[in-house]
Structures are given as structure tokens and as C-alpha cells.
Length: 275
Image (cartoon, rainbow, N blue to C red; front, top):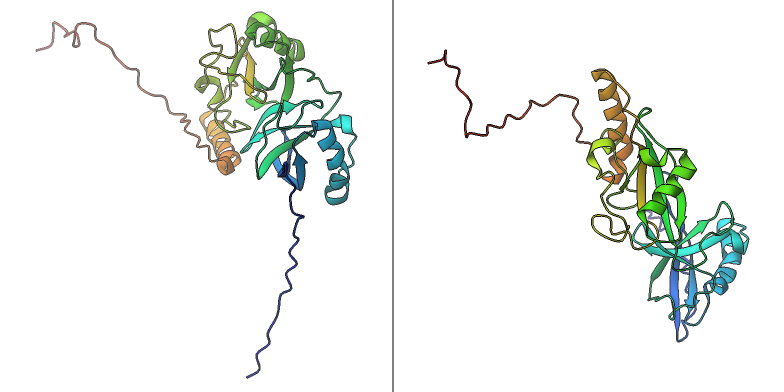
């Protein structure tokens, strides 16, 4: 019996030895409005004392050769990555290991910009916002809003400006869980903590202290779309399918629950005609 031995030639690419103060970094692309918002791009090396701008300059030829991404240095940013969550936006003049702590096997997000970089200072706050339109049972794409402070009033003013919702009718809620904070359109209208009674974003129950937080907003005068039971069931199936990969479970039920009766005297009032 003749045995055919097939040898698989495995080519192992060994990176050069790191010098003192150098760190291997995995770069992922942040695609906030894609079904899969986190996409691996390249492995690279950052060094202590290097500015963010210098690291971007070194990344550009790698991105062009390995990912077919031909980017202008002003058309993308780097930012903190914590698992799948986008965080602090790194400014071009920041220095690694002075302004930004890095470690071995570090990961960062690369984000392609639609326009000029609006983040100029660490005192600013970049929030990812998404409009909920109950009349259409629809979530709009993400839009970034850059704030000059942690003021709730400023956030609401910016959201009113981009959406056209009158300021007095604008309500917002912080997203829950891991980015992109997916939630069923059958649950979002009731389940989130809408319009928290706070004046700043960095306190309970919001705790929005860093870039990358997700904020949903809506027009308080807009009522949810009226649907038949069949339409609700069909929408529930679609939402369950959409959210399956995120691990989010749709718990909405179209059946009405019985009202809860509360007796203030400890028991029901007995009809005099009853025995």
C-alpha cells in the first residue's frame, strides 16, 4: 500500500526583535455603522517617546500595502480600544508613555474620518449618538457629537441641532453593554433610562467620562408605530435574527399583562351582597 505523504510548508513570519521601549500593537478599524464594527488591519510597532502623528505616518505605508487603504494623515485618527469598545481619541501631539500609557500586545482602533478632525483638546468629549424614531420603529445610523464640556444641556443642544427636534422635546438615554449597544426596537422605547434628571454627564446614572459612549435620543412627542399582533410577531422574529450574533435576547411579548391590584387596607373590599 502506497502512502502519499503530503507535507505542508508553513511559512512563519517572525517579527524583528523589539528594542527597549518598543511595543507590538494590533490595529483594528472601527466601523461604527457596519454590522461588524471591529475589523483587524495590521500588526505594527509603537515606541516610547513617539508622537501619535509619527505612529500614523509609519502606519500609512503598511495600510496601503497590506489593506489597500490609501489614507491621508489628516483623514484618520487612532483611539483607545477596550475589547470592542472605542475609547479615548488620541490627539496627534500626544506622546506614547507620557500622555498615553501603552503595554505589550496593545490594541488600538483606527477610525477613518468623514471630515476634518473636530477633537483638538483632551477637555472635549466625543459621544456616539443614534436617533430612535418610534413612529418608524427604526434606529438611525450613528453620528459623532463633540462636546466642549460634560454638560447635559450642551449635549441636548447639539442633538437638537443635528436632528431638528425642538430642545424641549428632546430626550436621551445612555446605551447599555458593549459597543454598539444593540437593543431591540421592540424594547428601546420602554427599557432604557430616558431623560435622566442630571445636569452633567459624568455622574450617576450616566458616568460618561470618556470618548466613545453611546447615547440614544428621541422626540418625546413621537408615538410608537401602531401594529397588529401579527406585525409585532413578525418584527420580533426579524429583531431576534438581527441581534442573535450579539447575544442580545429579545424579551418583548405582545400579550397584555393583567393589571396589578393594590389594596391599601390589606385586602380586597368585600361586596355587601356576598357571603
